[in-house]
Image (cartoon, rainbow, N blue to C red; front, side, top):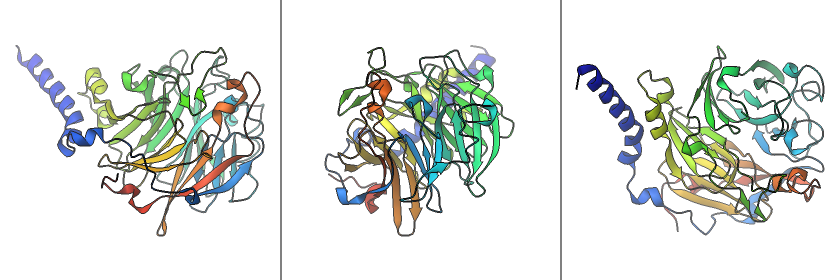
Length: 388
């Protein structure tokens, strides 16, 4: 074997081993298969209504440090009124950042066409994904774009289109995670990950159609299998995404699960091969269908389980905690963590997404109002001690 081929092989083996060794070195075989405990750690008293809507399906929420809540009501669910609003606890939501950005008509570059995800970056600003696709079964109405909002001023700081060459025919951009000046965006229409430099706007595409991003089963809820308008079971590719506080690990899954972990360093390694990238997508936990995924400052993952109406956590040491199951959590959606010296609080909308008109033969069966709940996180939810 010549020296060039040998060197290339060594690089491939090194990258592959690096992508796998942290998990193998840190966790025993038994830790990889710890099941979710059956008994929840919290009770119904820990789940408190915060804000309600008599007409909108709020799919996602972000809690700001000043106590306000940013609420996303996607157009693809048939929602009336603003796609993005803001409210104080118990207060009436108002369009955010203003009515113009929430207008139904006008320049698509200066309004929300089809919001699909939002996240709060470390600098406090909000980043939103506008897929430009208000109907998953129809063609896009506008180019996909990213929008940055500064909550301290309530103004849009930036808005720019996603490079067309990073998209595919049928792309529908969904979840977003941000670390530093890099955004990681999941494509739920054609499974893949976009890595976007937020300074230059340059977007690169990775992991097309890999197993960890591709839906293998339909979405299940306590009401049964969710079906599309044509009656077929609904399966949606890569949608949920989050990043570790140190930026080293990307967590991603299709709507139905399971959850995978990817080493972010491979996206920027010039010696990384497509094979190494695919092999780096490691099965992290056998989750159900999830409505939301977020990560705490200590690296603990929190997710809202659509299939069981639950909120769970998963520590950096790979210990699962069943935090709460409650009948009020009907399709718990995108959740947000607020930390304080007195403890941590999760905010989660009971979205009832499967009761939207598009999934109910054109007639919504939502039990109004849709409610956002606050949930006091038990102190041991970040513990790496296994509790039965």
